[in-house]
Length: 267
Ligand SMILES: *[C@@H]1O[C@H](CO)[C@@H](O)[C@H](O)[C@H]1NC(C)=O
Ligand SMILES: *[C@@H]1O[C@H](CO)[C@@H](O)[C@H](O)[C@H]1NC(C)=O
Image 1 (cartoon, rainbow, N blue to C red):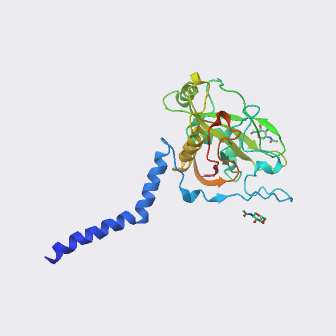
Image 2: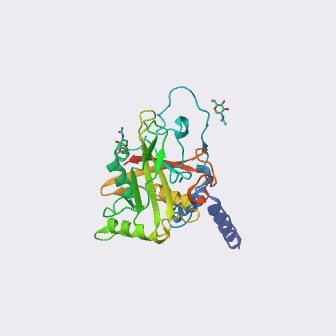
Image 3: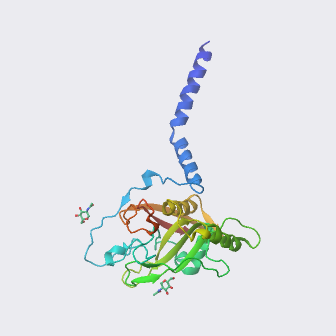
């Protein structure tokens, strides 16, 4: 009789403990990150804590952080898409990352490990954007355009990427912060998700946040690899570099102002 009473009580306590234990909550967070690859990823609030202190110090520019706020030397976190509008540079690959991925070739390989490819039989869609990363180079044309590929099969990513160009999807443009005034080696990415090409590469509603979160979710969910090279990526969310909202933003699409700073380590 005693055990008949104690067992259900014990099970109740046990099940409450399991539900409230950190193990099960980190498990559900893990699932959220995974879901992020197919739907809007809510970046965990706890990760969105870093904010920059915008006070400009008049001494030398400190590059030890692996990237420099472009605004210090007259740059900005919106690219130049049209004369008056720009798209947010919402992901930074820190210059403290694996030196290989800071090169152009290495970076396209890393991008492939995230499901993006820069090759599409030489086809090019969309106009060239410019950006000023405040490194003394002034405005530069985009140095890389990469698109998400959807399927792999013999002949693989290349075909998929061409398909993405027609079908729309996640893509990014990239610029390197390597001017002599702030030579950090960091990549600055404008990531977004767009409609199919019949719609003239319109960004979908919320397409800047969605595109960024897709790329970040791909990068941080687990180690990524291309051929036999493996990387582990960490993210830090930075607030205060980009103004949230749609002021000056191409297509007037709102974005939340968070920039994901990725540091990529080779395993
Ligand atoms: C930013 O840094 C300056 C100089 O160190 C300091 O005086 C100021 O209080 C800081 N502001 C914030 C919001 O942390
Ligand atoms: C800066 O990086 C870009 C993109 O990789 C490259 O084309 C350019 O030559 C680099 N500039 C210098 C000075 O290394």
